Image 1 (cartoon, helix red, strand yellow):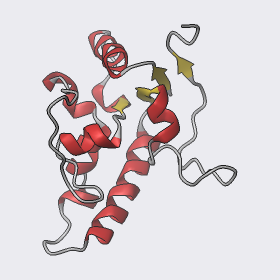
Image 2: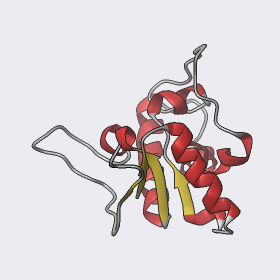
Image 3: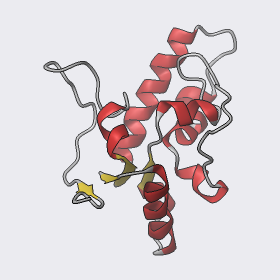
Image 4: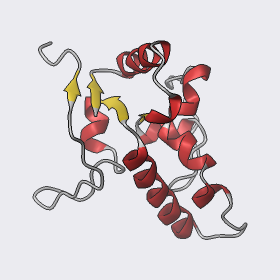
Length: 142
């Protein structure tokens, strides 16, 4: 897990890893649920339009968790007319599988703590559906 203080910093790390030749399927970028909704995620009710939203660079979109989930068979081929609850359950299952299959997960410090694909429940009953062998926190001393 690689955490950065901002979305721009996290995207910069992702960009540098891609420039270094790390295979694209090894890396997943987790954006906040708000950014995911602004970029077409149907999880928990669909899209939100916002004036000051964060723009994901086109060449980085394929690494985004919500993009990978939307392209996965678990979500992409759900029958029309499904309930939002059925969609959400399939979406969450797809998120966990993609994160477990990724070798590097990049996000902001806030999303590492708040994103429901990385943490479920409220203290003291927190469950982490995905575990990591190592955590790198970019610029933790600032």
